[in-house]
Length: 149
Image (cartoon, rainbow, N blue to C red; front, side, top):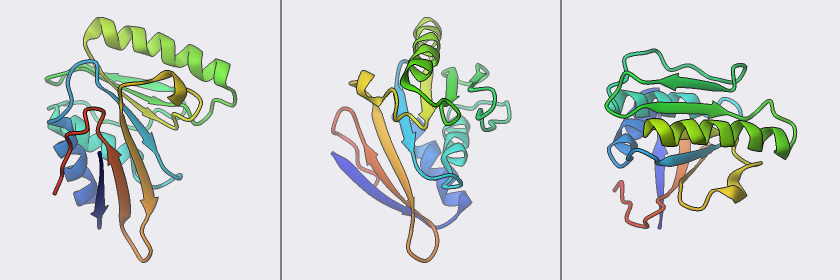
C-alpha cells in the first residue's frame, strides 16, 4: 500500500518523520530517495525525535554512516551518495546491516539505489519537490497497513 503525503515546510517534514518512527521496530529498514536538498536528513531527524534520540542527527554524506544509540531504539543512518558502484555500496550496507541486527537497530538509508534490489522487507520513501513549494512523499509500508490520513 502506498500513502501520498504533502508537507509544506520543515516542521511538517520533522512531524512526518516522527509519525513514521512510531511504526518502526528494531530491524526496520527505511530506504529514502529524493533529490539533493529534498529533506531526507530532516526526515531522519524527525524519526530520531520520535525515538527520543538525544544526539544531533546530521547528514552522514562524508562519513557514510552515523550511529545513534541514546533513543528507545538505536538508529543507524547511512548515506550512499558518494559511492559510485554497487560493490562499494554493498560492502558498506552489509557491514552496517550486520551491526543493525546485532544492536536491534533501525537502519535508514539515503541514496539506496545500488542496494535496493538486496532488500525485500523495507519501508520505501520517495521525496520530490512539489510544484510551487513543499514536498511530496510517497511512502510504501512493507506490511501494506500504512495510513497517514
